Length: 145
Image (cartoon, rainbow, N blue to C red; front, side, top):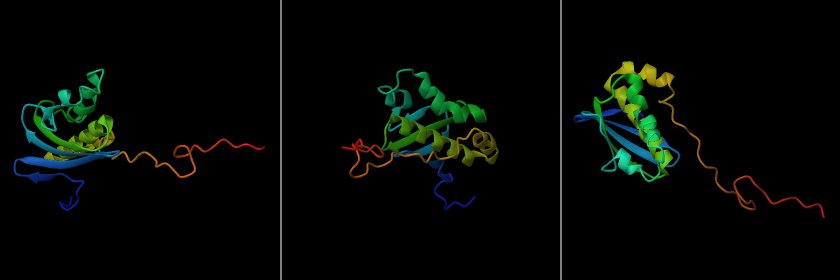
């Protein structure tokens, strides 16, 4: 693993730094040994994502998956800085960053995370609107006469 690659985690002091992206959202993750708290933009994750999530379990399912797969629930604390996108993109960007940061802890975590598909960046983005069309692909209705 080369340290020059931005996708691979870097050790910055006591933190492990990784970047996760999804749609237009970018998350910078700082992983450190701790009590298992997840802080997003200087607020707890449950408070930060609360206005958007009706079932609170969705947050737990999304952000805790990398920890449950590697058996490290409650062993690492996460501090995340997220910019851009909506709440879903931000949440999944944080999840990708956590998975990448856990690979920086020990290489044996890579196998279960890779098998679960958590180390792949989801490249789907919104297609831009084209000229002379109503949306990205929808065009005016054809009229023969």
